[in-house]
Length: 244
Ligand code: NAP
Image 1 (cartoon, rainbow, N blue to C red):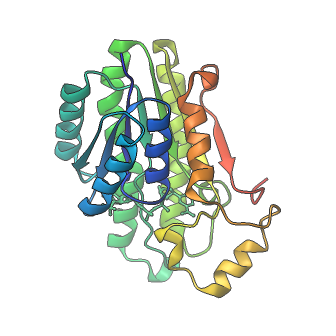
Image 2 (image 1 turned 30 degrees about the vertical axis):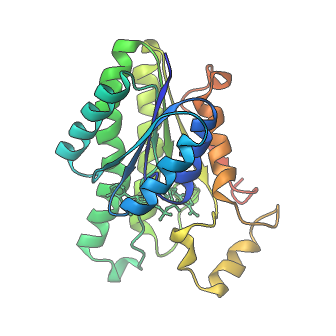
């Protein structure tokens, strides 16, 4: 049976590249997006070019009902859920004393609670199948912290603890749970940074280049493949050596 992959935030950036990479591996792909339908449909078309089926589903990852309906829809359409990439994420940066409660909650709800809701809904199916791969997109900021990103760092550090806990909980059911921690990736998320910030980040990268979304997608594809069958509970940093 053809495998099914779900990629949250698959309309743009890292999620888009991951969806395309998974489609190259022969998996049907469900792309979850929030508001950007046109971009999501573009990813669907790019996946279909690789000879698989793909669908785009509008869903706010932080809303339980949205998530449950989306998973039901995907399971009905494709009959299986084999790979979940929890990638949807946002930033709302600010120094602590200027950070509003709303901005703290929005980032935690989208990045961490979204990951919880999708993992819970998919794990129920994967446990019955006795197989599955969950890949959570963290960040090196969740490992080393970053001034001005307390909410984002907390959400990503939370994802790492969540990943390790699920790996222990679901391992005996044949489900692998890992995290990928990207460094500085060229996407809409980092496009908003000033040239000065970009230059100072660049100086911290031993490989002397920023990542393309495809650099992260390659690591996601590896963890989604049978080649990673004996890997679980790990955080794979893909950052040109920034964090070591
Ligand atoms: P991006 O280009 O800004 O794309 C974000 C994606 O998340 C979009 O597809 C967006 O959907 C979706 N999304 C946002 N809020 C959502 C919600 N409430 N419900 C459903 N989908 C939602 O981001 P990116 O740079 O590719 O980042 C992807 C992941 O990698 C994030 O978790 C981010 O924290 C992590 N990361 C990024 C970097 C980096 O340097 N870029 C570094 C480390 C980690 P719409 O298109 O519909 O809005």
